[in-house]
Amino acid sequence: MRKRRLCAFLEFLFACLLCCSIPQTNALAQGPQHGSWQPQQHGLIGVYAHLDVEDAINQYTGPANPTSEQLHAYLRNLYVRMFANPALVGIELGEHWKTIQTRTEGPSGTPVDQFDWSYLDDAFLFAHVAHKSLRLNITPGIYSPAGVLGEIPPCDGLFPGTPGPVMDDCGTVQFQGVPEKGPNEVFVFPLPWNCLYKNAWADFLSNLNARYKDREEFASIVVAGPIGASPEMILPTDNNDSSPQPSGEPVDAMWRALIKNAYKSDSSYWGTDQVFIDQWEQTIDTYEKIFSGISLDLTPDTGDDFPEFSSTLPPILPPLYTPDCNATPFVMSCEAKVEIISYFISEQGHNGKSTKVGGMTASSNTGDGNIGIPGVKLLTSLDPQPWPPIRGGADFDYPVSDPTKILQEGCIDYPDVSNCQNITPEEAAYNVLTDFFYGTPAGPEYGSMRGPAPVQYLKIDYTDVLYAEENPCPPQPSKSLGRTSLQDLLFSASRSLFKIAYPRLEFPSPPSTCRWWF
Image (cartoon, rainbow, N blue to C red):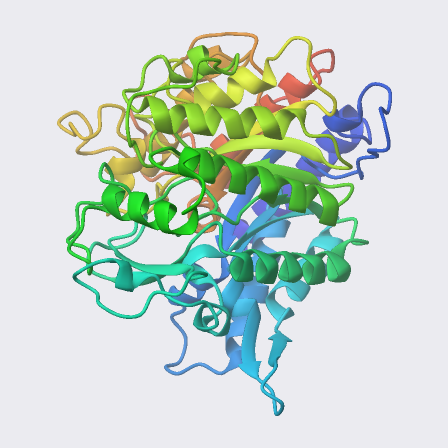
């Protein structure tokens, strides 16, 4: 009963805070409207819950062998809880392409596509009822429909360890130990330049846009296509994937052979990352053509994770190269990513733009020179700002409430954890916020350096939101935070983001959840 009274009070308090203090418009809508881009009135500023459908289903603890309806009821309950949390402005919902679309062979031998939009439909419905936002994160790559991958001829026969026929238009390859996945599993990886793959993905995006384009809750979509296991610019390379490959070849050597096979008559692509630059630029064009009136989110990650064929750089470097790449040894990879970022911010279209870091931790580098969160802040601080202005944010890489991940996420000195053995989820989250707000006007509020760089949004795993709601008052005070709860920190981060966006307004601090618990 006390928990229900507490939640109701906090919802009322936060609603009053928003109604009294924040104009009914978002930061993207400030200033004159240039061109034809007219941003919808979304809550693009604030704290979001990051919820992946497949990961959430893996956490299901109900009856064994659940029915589809049981899983949908379980997800709906999570949506309701996320949207009801007064510190959150919405959800970033992730789902695999293959979960939504299946492709089978019809009676005449032509492909037949079927779409299951039900998880997304539910999320849009509850976002509408709650008057909150939904950001979409749909992942192709290794999560492409089996029917799509099955239509693409494999390239594995290029390598002695995996003999077989190789067609001129081959477009998949097997990689083991794909980054962000386990080291033992082998995945069918669609090659970024394959036309069958690209066309199928563009067709899916068109169907998605047709279904949700008029939903005012639709705030943004993460740009994806030439990817592996997430929308981040992370490919298997010698640097990040030391697993023995099915082909027996080093990963970068495989990429070199695959590129040479695809571009037999154009040696300018051989031994460079130009093909990845081209495919990302084409993907950005595709998103700009299909979507309108939302934000497109690009996730470059850090300066590495593209093949590092050599240290030879083009004679003319993009202006962003020095601040984004001066501290990384992966110069070819970083230069390629900077070219993609530069293209993204200069491309004209009908959408807003943002970049984000998909894997922020307390030990993330806060210095310039390796993209990451400093690269995000570099773009939000450009003077003059392009139009539309570039917004920026970051995701917690791991849940701070997960005892198996708390040190990796929240320990400042990780992998040295000698000073973090008894760290609490609240302290771990505070440490991550210290990194996130470093160099922003809110830096001192988190024991960090003040600076002019604006940031607009933050994403925390949905399991941390559940933990915050279920632990409104830590049982024991910590040395650094007292009895500050994780819910308090979510309120604090939300307030800081709004203060950065609207510096001339006053934002009263919400009371501690612990104060109202006793």
